[in-house]
Amino acid sequence: MSRTMDKRERLRAGLLGLMQDKFERCRLEQGSLSDELRLSEDLLIDSIMIVQLIVYIELDLGLSVPDAEVDPRAFATVGSLLTFMESLEPVNSVSNDGSGGGAGLDGAVARSK
Image (cartoon, rainbow, N blue to C red; front, side):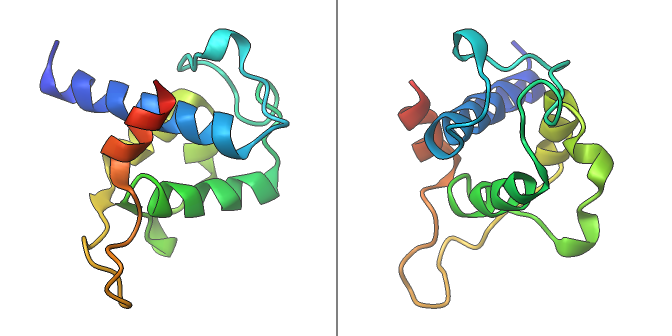
């Protein structure tokens, strides 16, 4: 498996864990996320949930989501969201209060298993 694919699958596992943990309304069949699933129509994720998802991506997966980089097209499908997430940089490992920030992607992947 290529390194890029490995990263994408780790992101997919982290995203799946987030959706299962945070969004009760989200329809996930058989606990999987295929690239073609539409966030709004298929998974019932509304605009408020998209904003929440951005926060969870930063806090739980440890990826920095710059406001200027948020494009609604990135949230059309699971595949477009994963491609967007692949382009994100990690959040600083130490937050302003010194607590260390979010659990990061590895913690989210461990929770999704």
